[in-house]
Image (cartoon, rainbow, N blue to C red; front, side, top):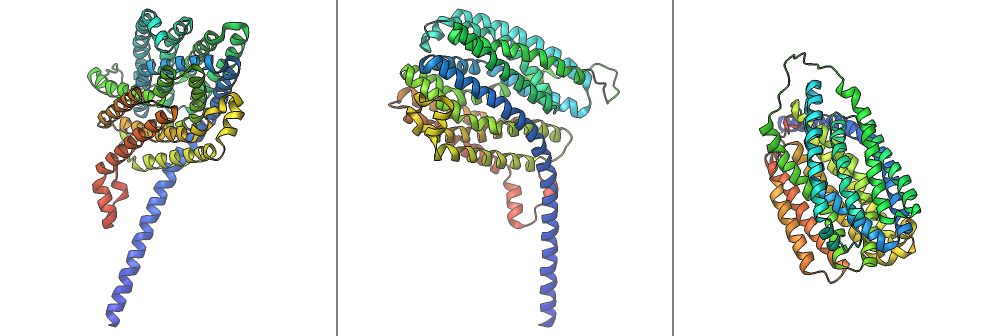
Length: 462
């Protein structure tokens, strides 16, 4: 009995030591991953917070200067333009991924080549879309119930700079130059605000608001070129003399899923504004657009986490480091940040809307918490999509596309009220999130089983 007691105590002591060692290992890994994520995210968050402040000033002031009906037109055009600009979002993802990998390998000559090639093809693509937009501008205007097509023509003209700037943003983000990236967003929003106020005050109404966005993006693009000079002028660390050759087939194979993912994300965030503008009266649609814009504050608060996570995971994957901790931390931080803002919407929705847009927009205050829930789900889905793109796993696209198709059909066939539309959004995005996080857990089933058994090696996890 004495020997059994000694053996039992020794086993318990060894188990305690193992648990302590495992805990120290996990804490060490957590501190390194979390510290880098938080430090980089804080830079982007600060820039995004300032840019978002001016963006919301722009929306609030335009809402007051234009009134609900014209503000609804402006928001619908911006939402439609955002969906068209999904191509630019796909290019951003591709540029960010390849620039991140080339930066990690020290291939600066290849970075310069990447910038030239993508800028050239983006310009040609923007020119083609501008011509198509001119041809179908009247049809689009009728669908969005917009009388004048001049704001639409300005919006299509803005595609040139909107597309070109994504190449600059992608390289800045991929090379983890978060300070100039953040300032770029701030500059663009300040210019849009000041130019928007001036042009609308001069009597250009919706065209002035749209034109302000075009001019702001054009000036910001000029600044981005200055920011890229130092990066693109750097010397290679590899010492190779031969010209870098891109694998065009591999780029295309990655670009198509990235483009589709970007389209689905933009569609998920903007399709409701367009459909509400189409099916509901102008004043009601304008009020909904304002409430929806307020709800999207959640994305401005959580997007920095996604922006930092993608290049970090791409870099870790390139050099063979493990990245599961970074993803889980990003998911946790995104959820916590979203819940804080959603709590404010639940407690005082009418006060938030009245403070930001005025009492004429408070008629739909009761839907703000539910739209906030939609945006919370979207933020989590956006982060998971970015993770899958970084690790080159595209299985999620099939389910994402199916859910969006069902959502649009459901709203088209059944829209008795705006609240019904919002609840369709909640159900569809909730199902999509469950599927996507469920698929991630399924791919990690062996690691989860190992954790349950107690023989999980955190250093070997991916």
